[in-house]
Image 1: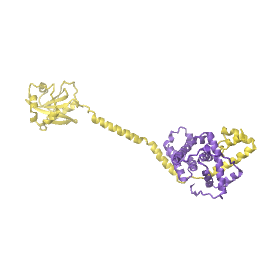
Image 2 (image 1 turned 90 degrees about the horizontal axis):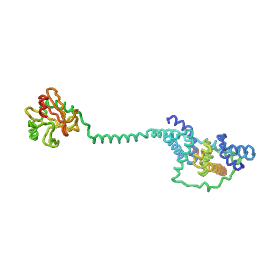
Image 3 (image 1 turned 45 degrees about the horizontal axis):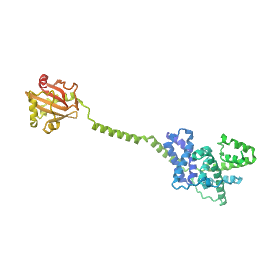
Image 4 (image 1 turned 30 degrees about the vertical axis):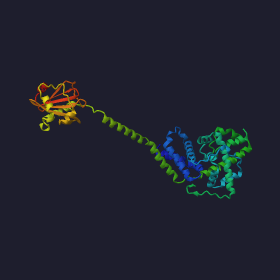
Length: 180
Length: 242
């Protein structure tokens, strides 16, 4: 792959990849490391991908695997099946609240969602991958993705509501060009 | 499909419409069209999802991230494109080592004995280069000088012994060649080399005569050695010594 082609690929995908990395790592430095590592792996191993239309899935899958590897050292394994189901249904005020909140607060709410549900949720909201591709990326069955989405959304709504009840004070300092 | 099932399916429907052509959602979407309650829920769900997605899109990567990715990727591509370099350098080094080992251990290919003959013809013409009669080789010289001695079958040559006894040795094409002067009426010069190092163009035992610059030579092979006998006498005189 030429330098120009690689730069185009980066331009097309790095923002989405970074956002997913941020949702997983929950802090900007680790998200940047994960993003760079993902593209580095593409530069060194991506040529083995036969179906070029799968680039996006390859990138997200690789990032997720790298995240799991990174986290493995200090992993706290949560059994998804032990988590309570998402019970809170979307209400009209949830929509209004989401619209009113600034992006950093919404992201912080997303980061409050437990990791198992956060990964499919972030991929869903990035709108880059279908539920099938999310399942492929995370290496879980489609049904698992669906239930994790359902529970993840419920957790997110609860997290956003809790932030609202806290007076809307969001400890999520925004930086120029990014968040931390 | 019950509404609960439809909700379970539709909550995975992306708010940007990217799933509109996905048949997986068709039945649930159809049900939402016909069920007011489900339709209202779906509208809220989509609005909420769209709001969250929009907020997520507002998160921009750090300004330097792109350049860092590009730089890292270039390094990665260089590494990928040149991964073979150290491998091939290693392979080349192994081959070089093998080559030199083989060259050093393998016996050198024999040189055309005509080189030895030409050298002998030239060398013998310069008496000043020769040691003449060597005291340590008196018995050898006596044997060679004896008219009864025929050289065609060669001599019982021991190179270490010749060297130890002070026999003149020279190098021709990098090979050791011994030279013994002896008198049989006139002075003759006998050059002795190993057959593995010089190869005559004639069959073993068949002498090859040559003359040059007033000197005559005869070259032949016997046992493990190649001999060149040189004199300023005629080729016929040389033949009589064989």
